[in-house]
Image (cartoon, rainbow, N blue to C red; front, side, top):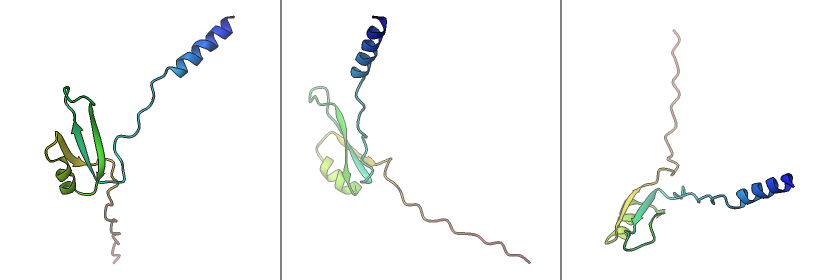
Length: 89
């Protein structure tokens, strides 16, 4: 009886665990728009990472309570390091 009660409690705990959230920032685009919906507007706030440039994002955010920012998860292509050779002599 104790074993089945413990098993039931474990199964219940696993089923009521909080769901995990999806990744907020889309790593395919370099610019994100953070949209704020105030308490009166409802809906909370969210990120829209579907912009390829800051001006494109600012044009979409114009007139809204939103701000454009660089995507912290966008993979930046750093220039390759040059090899340095020592001169022997």
